Length: 219
Image (cartoon, rainbow, N blue to C red; front, side, top):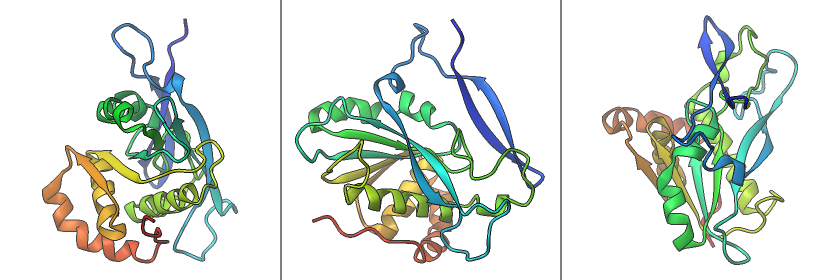
């Protein structure tokens, strides 16, 4: 049986490079979660802030996300939303246990958004020069704001109508979730977050994010 592969990108010398490595597996050799979720795509601007055309002539890219509705209950279930960090999003689908453990009691849908430049969410082809200026936490949080705005408006057909949205993240993803909550004031939960580093940078990040689209308050 072929070993599932996960794809990541790393920044080197102002270019993106793609690497394939074996997908994280359970001890039994089977995949836990991603097989029970649907893989979807959302069109994002390469830059939420700049009017300058990006390299390559394209202004948008396809951002990958996973929707897991096995525990969702009701016509507008709550959503547990994961802020993807620096790897293939399937890694977090498979290993963010608190979301899977809590979802049945809450009747929650799970949504995992892949971070730009990682996995298959590549704004540029591998080895494109001059593209790394769009790999920033401000752009990543603006991606989340754009995605969540569309989701709360019912524009994502796979998700449908949703209730309250609670953000989750671990490590760098936890920092994104916390910065996002400081700006948007919605619920977010950070795990194993680097808080000393976060506190040093939060003022800068929130000031920069103020230029991005804001979410409407919960009804």
